[in-house]
Length: 125
Picture 1 (cartoon, rainbow, N blue to C red):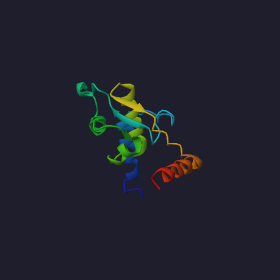
Picture 2: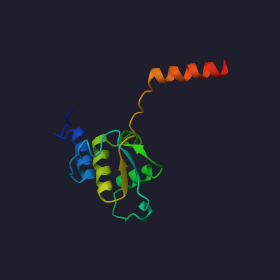
Picture 3: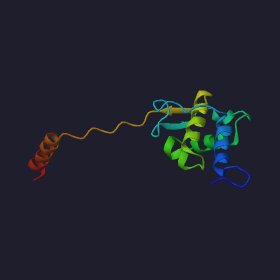
Picture 4: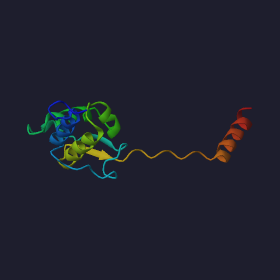
């Protein structure tokens, strides 16, 4: 919906996102996916004052331990793309550490489980 002066309120959100990210592009999905785990680096307490309020907020959130990108975005009121861009910038600056998510465990082989169960039954009745 365009206002009477020709200004669209949605434009404000787009301009704000552009300003917050300083015009940077989204990182590759392989670099920072929704399930990538992120935490503050050990020396994050020595952060410079040149970080934006949004970057400071993300560092504070990440100080609690490993969180996924999706969880971090959920703790903010920022669009996911903006969060990913800011996180990528903080990783490049050495303020954050990322690691891939824990791989799902393989399911146990049914035959092995049955053999264990049969062995337990034989031993303990």
